[in-house]
Length: 309
Ligand SMILES: Cc1cc2nc3c(=O)[nH]c(=O)nc-3n(C[C@H](O)[C@H](O)[C@H](O)COP(=O)(O)OP(=O)(O)OC[C@H]3O[C@@H](n4cnc5c(N)ncnc54)[C@H](O)[C@@H]3O)c2cc1C
Image 1 (cartoon, rainbow, N blue to C red):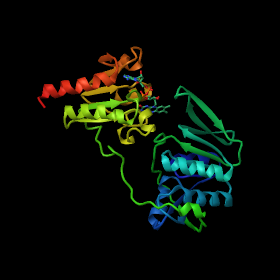
Image 2: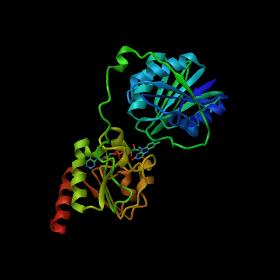
Image 3: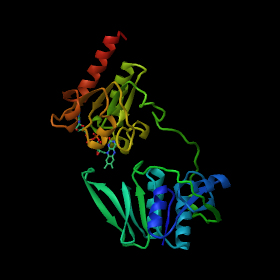
Image 4: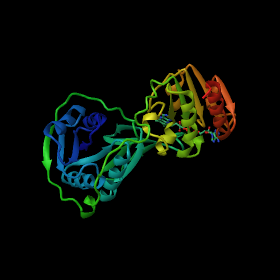
């Protein structure tokens, strides 16, 4: 049995299954070096497909053809919109079992078992596959990218794309708002969580950070990053960044353990939460019980007044 995938942990899983990890790369001008470089990340073979850049459906076409032509038991994807879209499309195309938001994968009785947090991350489900092909889509940044130093052969594959696969064109690529923020270097962080209500709620954090000045930045919890309210670059915690600013102001953040590990070393932690029993108060230096929609604007005005701006 051969596992087909690109992340390095796939190579280790494939070895445990007695197989190899292969990768597929679809693009308009993928050089030999770029394709072969996936060997450093655990793939022993790389299928190079000449096709449109950045679109999900051509990759579904390519992967479906490759999986059908080989002895592939599993297809693994990293998290992210493209991974979700390709993985789901491939599952539909192959009639394969699919699990997403996976945080760990292990081998049990010669098969892969995927772990997926459920019920608001309060429990972990163990997912076993009954289908011939299992598709596993990781949670964003749940798996580390490691160079293992191997080599890969590159095989060119010609794929006939479905007519609908090539209808879209990538016009431009851009970064999300805040992708360049330096939260690790900021002295003051204003972090927002689900309590902000929606993406627009971050304006309250932006305003306060702006009032504090250039040494401050806005950060976020995973819940809001996953919801698309804030860019991943600003996520604090176990699967995000670890910070230790002079002041960490948490607004509408419950204080889950996975968030705490990323910010607990901050010099001063101030939390605003409407729930007096929120876990974040257990490790805050100052806790404000109340509605952030009322408190944050007042805080911003107070900081501005203090600074005379
Ligand atoms: C493997 C794994 C890795 C993870 N990695 C991370 C990670 O890196 N970083 C991370 O942050 N999380 C991570 N999580 C998720 C984590 O478990 C929590 O789900 C997440 O941190 C919760 O985010 P939150 O505090 O924004 O949302 P919630 O837990 O929903 O909390 C929202 C809070 O807002 C308060 N609130 C609501 N309205 C208001 C209001 N008007 N005024 C004031 N307060 C209000 C509520 O009382 C509540 O306490 C991970 C989970 C797993 C399983």
